[in-house]
Length: 296
Image 1: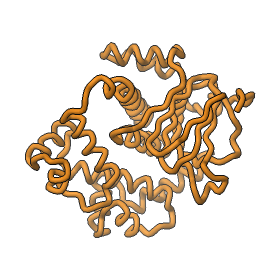
Image 2: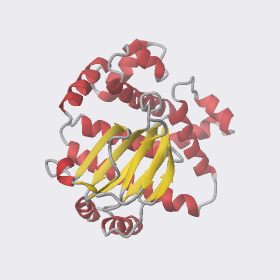
Image 3: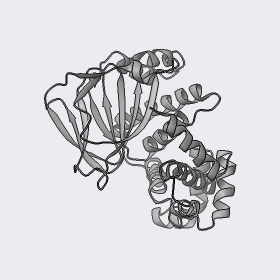
Image 4: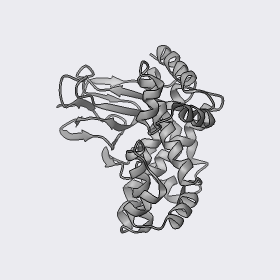
């Protein structure tokens, strides 16, 4: 593919001085090769296909994160023209260099501050990196939910999530390369395992046997690294996944959604959902449907 003459403008996406836009899209062949006057982070949430950047083409697959600077021509394509049969689903986080400028003053860590400067000043080329521990997927889910269903303070909360995403991106690029596999890395693998297998009958004892750790030590690690017990961490992952399903599968029965995220008892699912989200699954789905109708 050659360079694009189609440019997307930030003024179409950025509203109310937010300087940030998040969406979830099923890629097709309709959008042409294009560049834009903003920065983009694109995360492949489902399926597989291809990512074209000017003269280069890469395979795109679930868990892959792409950084696209200002002015770089690119486009995603599904692996098959029948997008409904083999969808390529991508989360897009679009932001302006001005957003990075505003965040720089609250960063106490020199490596992260320098990284922000490099991003802002277009000193980093386009690159891709794999989400090895599930942290990127979790942040994109949270960003999309908060952007799609705004509440009081959503602007501040979105900036907080975005900053977490930048720190996570830095760690994946640099920290993971500098340190050998150790017990801390193994624990991150456990968190990733939960992100993938949350619908299964997961217990602390099963994880301890699978990863050869003692239950007591594993529970201490959950508390130290997540601020939660294993039980509450698993509940949060399951409810987070159910939010995504409720907003996408508008006609699926709630008992089926509950089962898909690991709850065999719908009443228990509804109680946990309301405790964490603050509303019933049905109420959340209704708000998601209404918000979807309002989106351009």
